[in-house]
Length: 79
Image 1: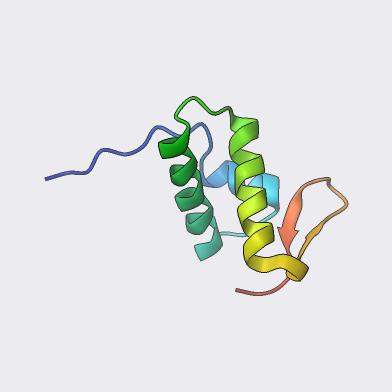
Image 2: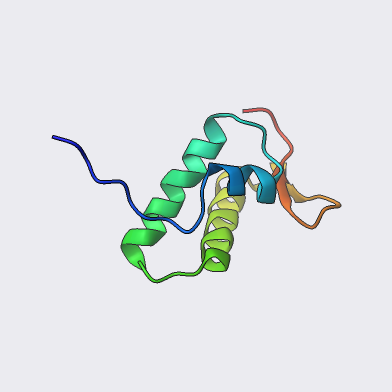
């Protein structure tokens, strides 16, 4: 039986571009975080998804998470 994919307004390419990530497991983790928000608020906007992901990553990685010059966020430690 196939599991239906959750219709998110953000995808892996968006996450890599917004957060300045390279293809890596953190992108998949961000998509899992986005799915959490979908189940809490299926009508959330793309901007709300970005904020939700940013907040979760900040909590998880605290001091290793910082703003870069492109006004996006990046993880400054290797995962």
